[in-house]
Length: 192
Image 1 (cartoon, helix red, strand yellow):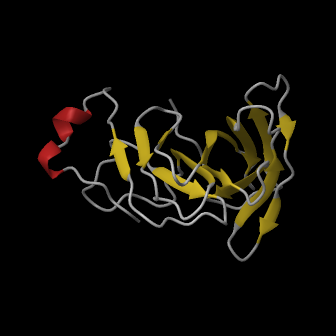
Image 2 (cartoon, helix red, strand yellow):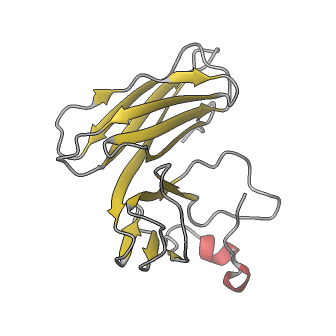
Image 3 (cartoon, helix red, strand yellow):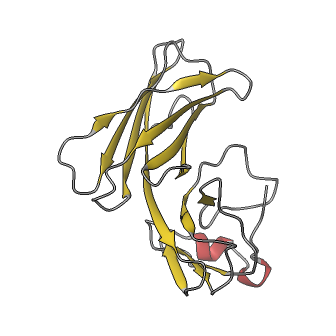
């Protein structure tokens, strides 16, 4: 398997409206044109093209997609980009937005089933929409670290603020020989 010629990272989180999904696409190199982005919402047969706009200050492509609120607010994003050497890369990202009532117990799962966020009553200041999902690794790992799960991002609509605590539980996939290369007593969650 040949590594991709460049890295293409997708991120998604709830927008300010009940039907909005904020999206970012970042490339590790210059592109010849704006990436193509498709959104496949659960329950919709045909994917929808989403127009991206370049944010020069942040060097990312952004969009706000409109979801059908009568359907589950989950699905898949698919991006295709071409660099200046005409090499192409594709990337995909599952998304799942969960409405949370601030006075209720809530549990959110990442699409891969390996990350779970529990929010007890009072963890949010008011009702809102929250997501947890795979996130792009935007920079190389620090020297000596091995990625055994994630990375994950917790996203919320702009009006949502955390006012209490919650529990983030991570599971690790069982594949390959990572167990032989990882000292589990030294394993930790890293922020960067």
